[in-house]
Each structure stands twice: as C-alpha cells, then as structure tokens.
Image (cartoon, rainbow, N blue to C red; front, side, top):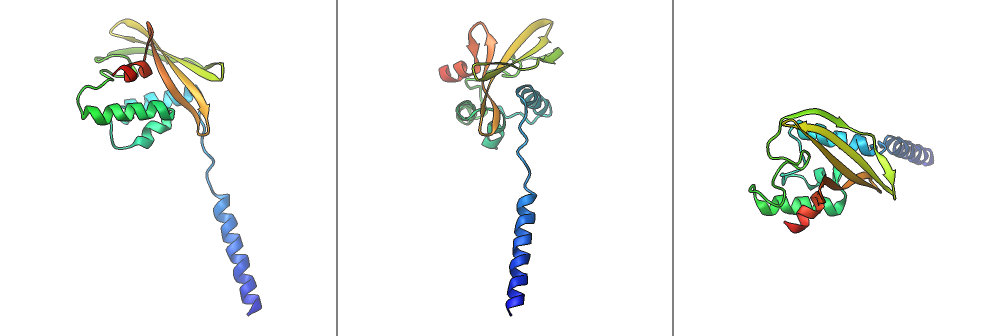
Length: 158
C-alpha cells in the first residue's frame, strides 16, 4: 500500500511539473511590431475599432484607459458615428493608401513613439503612436494626428 501511494505521489508530481513546464511565455512585441500588427489585423478586417464583441481585442493593443474610451464610444454610438468619425489608423473617412511605412520606435521619458507614414489620395500623412510599457508589454496610449489633434483628445471631447 505504501509503495502504491508513493508511486501515485511521484506520478502526480511528474504530471504537475510537465503541465507547468509547458506554459507559453507571453510574447511581448516591440512598439513598432505592435503597431505593425494592429495595421495587419485592421487590413484583415479584424480591427479592434468599431466593434463591441471583444474588449480583450482592444486591450491587446491599447492601454486600459484608451481601450475603455474606445469601447465606450463603440457601445454608445450603436453603429452610428461616434467620437471616432473616420478610420483612426489613417485619420480619414475615405482611403487610397500608397507608400505606407512604419518607422522604428524612438524612446524618451519612458515612452515609445512610432511614426507611420503614407500617402492618402496623393497627400502625405504622418501619424505618431505613443506607447507605454506596462505589465503586459507595450500598449498604445494615444495616437497623434498633427495640428494638436489626438485620438485621446477626440474621445474626451466626443
């Protein structure tokens, strides 16, 4: 009986170690890789914007405060135009995107900045993503459109 108990105990311990040893490490993306992934998913029609199915999809890319504001805007607008009245990744309602490029991140003051450059209908556009590094890795805390306009500012005003 003692040997059966001992074998069972050893088997449980081995199983426990095997299960814990197989946990996947969190894949933390660099700031520019996170922005690139956001555009990739957006272009595959899996954008976190304008959807009310998955708040977790917002948390994958945005820090909590901004994600919650985007979620609130999507829920309260009920499919109509809310505070976000165009595509926030291109700062436009209509798009014909060419010469798209994502620059490498620059770092200052504990934040990262990633510039995205493209032409829309022949007009050069620059959008800057501001990211913070938290427990879950880099997350977007704001998007700067130029001329003092930001996504956070539009959501607060909206």
